[in-house]
Length: 335
Image (cartoon, rainbow, N blue to C red; front, top):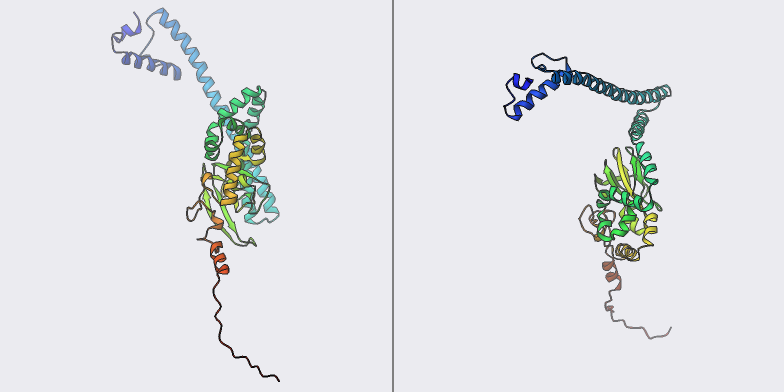
């Protein structure tokens, strides 16, 4: 007679038998059992003996794993607070201002946050060992979702070109109040995508004394596209408002790829000329923050700045009218 027959559940619904079995396993795994369900024959006694020893091993392994996990977390926190304590003692001893203290503590927090991503370099080492074709295919599929968040590329360029572009997508992390690029910067032609955090686009006057936040960008928004496609200087300053994680593509790397794709290079030139010659930002899916027009950016918006109309000025100074003259009697007498 088995325990199922003893407790008269052998003919019950499978849900009832399953409940009895789970109850027996849980009680045996966590305690030595209550004795309400016991083995009724030799086979069941052998099974129960083996299962209890196995359950003890599983239970000990789980407790050990939890202890190691908590110990690692505790060690990470101890290292973080140790660094904070050393920095604070140094700044207190040297009477450092509160503002600098806050910035130093924020940066130490940033370093601690970034140290968690050290496994990324290990992943890159493994990927670099693969063959070229397999590596490109793996990277493309792993970054396909990232590339899809750059609609400028996915709508204008071929899939063959995008496979290569996926290889040059990089990532970086930016601490709070860190400048990504300044207004007027040249040679920093990168297009950025926000993965996490917020970035403020700031307009500055010529002296840099006055600053105005044009817009705060959030996750999955793009910035820096105009300089990327035209190689012109930055029209505004980009600055992080908190910890930010960014993806970016370098213009020089992108142009190097386009050398192998003539048709895609023509599309790139078309985008560039549309901006430079006609101030048409429509294909970049970019509009002025103030008036939502696509023929200018916010730093040259007529609603925000005094920008004279070229046509009006030309008409004003090229307009001609007949000169009105008054009659004059000349004195013909010689002196």
